[in-house]
Length: 50
Image 1 (cartoon, one colour):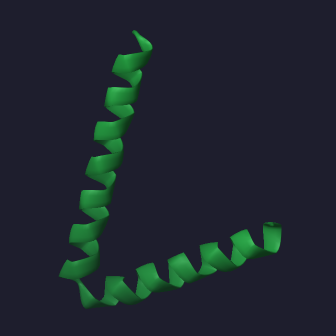
Image 2 (cartoon, one colour):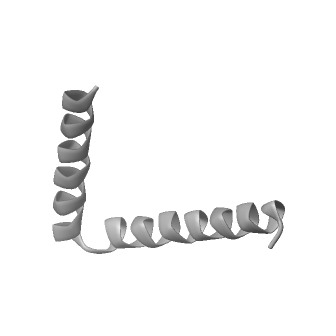
């Protein structure tokens, strides 16, 4: 595979992942709280690591 093909595949996977997470985020209210807690946990972890 060429580098450009790898980049294209990764871009498509990234877009699909974002779309799936967006659908989950806005479709189920309980998942909204779960996602907020997850994002908060990762941001706190990232601040602790830096």
